[in-house]
Amino acid sequence: EEDPGAALVRLEQAESIRRAIRQLPTQYRRVVELRLVRRLDHAEIARILRLPHGAVRVLFCRGIRNVRRAVRGDDATAP
Image 1 (cartoon, one colour):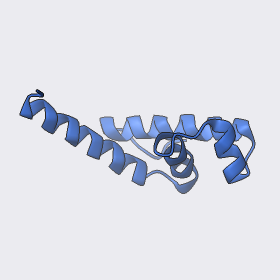
Image 2 (tube, one colour; image 1 turned 45 degrees about the vertical axis):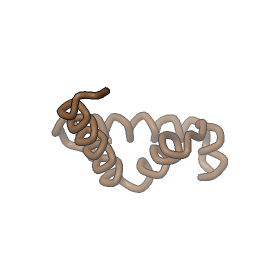
Image 3 (cartoon, helix red, strand yellow; image 1 turned 90 degrees about the horizontal axis):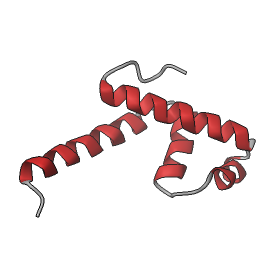
C-alpha cells in the first residue's frame, strides 16, 4: 500500500503536469495531448492535424520540453 504522503506528492506532480500542458500554446498542446492522452503515434497525429510527420515530432519535442520547464519553474513558452 502506498504511503499517503507519497500519494499526495504524486497527485500534486500530476496536477502540475496537467496545468503545464493546458498552458502550452495551442500548436504544442494539441500534439502533446494527442500523444499522451489519446496515445496516438506521430504518424496518426500528422494525419489528424494534416501536418508533416517531421513537424509533429518537432512540436511534440518542444511541447514536452516546455512542460518540463514549467514543472521545474522555468519559462514555459520558449520555443
